[in-house]
Amino acid sequence: MSATSIVIPTYNRAPVLGRAIDSALAQTHDDLEVIVVDDGSTDGTDAVVDAYDDDRLAYVATGTNGGANAARNRGIERATGEFVSFLDSDDELAPTHVERALEAFRAGSSRVGGVYTAYRKRRDGDVYDRTRACERVTLEDLGRGNPIGGFSATTFPIDAFDTVGTLDEDLPAAQDYEFYLRLLASEEFDEIRGVSDALVDRHTDGERIGTDPERKLEGYRRVLERHGRRIRRRRRAEFAANVAFVHAENGRREPAARYLERAIAIDPWNGRHYVYYCAAGVSCRALLAVRDAKSRLAVYANRLG
Image (tube, rainbow, N blue to C red; front, side):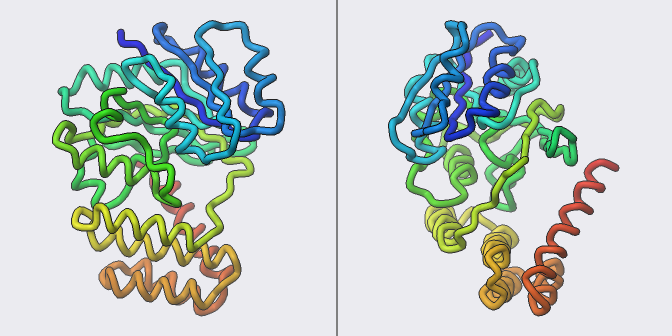
């Protein structure tokens, strides 16, 4: 069994950090270290970590708040494991998460660049959604979307960061997606494996969607600048629609409608964007209600499947 480093970036989440640490230390895989990277917290996060008496647990304080990707990169620098798993500080791992991820690496070839697992979403302690994980994700799949989601629930060989570089700390949005594209666009890796069992609980209580459309737009622009020839029309239209939703969350109906017009122009065969555009003509609240209804239908379909 290979040594694994679990990196937990955190910022002012002292009340829930212990839950993440406990789940990381409870792994059935024995050869591991858990690295908490405190990204400038001011809420007593250091005291939470100090309360543990476990030599597998390490604490790294950045001193300033540089963002989650900067914290993850400090964790990568500190890691001594052959593999690096990422866990957000308000989430928790199933006890077999690392063991199953390493099994997926062993079952594949040396060209497997990463592993991710399905996960459950919890709010107020209750499960309200469960994602699926594809058996394998290729560069072509990433051109159509991001089936992997965020970094929490992912594991990578430490050598992958030497090969393709660490996470982009300056990218204002889509940082996870950009790294996956960069990883599979390299000559060394051609797939990310999925584990179908839900081995992470994502707690979404108090979770906030990014509220700055300009940052989101700039992030998408840079991703397209770097990887545009690999990103298909449907995914480009989703970028525009996502910016529209952020405008709607800020009560700006007219720019929301304009970005939905852009989504339709990019991918005129996707009927969903026409429905969103009609809703935006009514109000921001109507647009967000239609989006949320679509998400709920997707959840029900996922459960039936």
